[in-house]
Image (cartoon, rainbow, N blue to C red; front, side, top):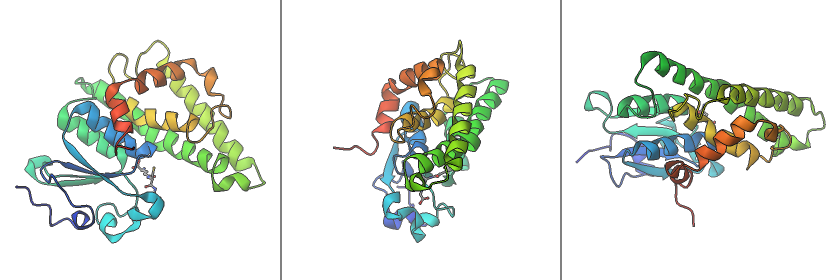
Length: 234
Ligand SMILES: N[C@@H](CCC(=O)N[C@@H](CS)C(=O)NCC(=O)O)C(=O)O
């Protein structure tokens, strides 16, 4: 039986199945990347809800896993060389899981780097810009009179959707007919932008036909649906 007691996180979020990959997350666009990937890969895992609305990611137990205090994070009891591996940053987790399973990543070396490039595109651009747009459009920043921050993030978000739209012209997925971690990294963010953030009109989403078609097809995948419903909600 695998013993994870050396990891303080397991005192607050105990592992029922310590032999399985432990996922600590909340169903945000960054969190669902990992649950979607795990569902697509068919890797056994145990999901623990870290309620960021209650600041649980800032508890000493969670900080022992991710000093940056952000979900998602994983503890894989079967990491490299059979040793446990702790990892945070959703992009790093996606690359790790893809390499571990050989799934959601092309076998060809050049195409692997191209896939990782698009994951970085999401991590360095789409996530931070959409997140700020959400803040200034829907949350606390909404009441700020000076609209320049909102306009700045709106324009940049729109530009980024345009970049993705061009990439998807004539392609089913970002890497042609292969559904990869690049798609996984972006689906939840695009869904969130027009859903929870209510920014569909603000960014002119309907003028990006390739992205709209890609999003619809991505969300229709059964494993994506399952990943979005973790943890099960009544
Ligand atoms: N670059 C990080 C971003 C993670 C992140 O921003 N997580 C947010 C939720 S989407 C969070 O944990 N926020 C909690 C807080 O800041 O209190 C990643 O992709 O893993």
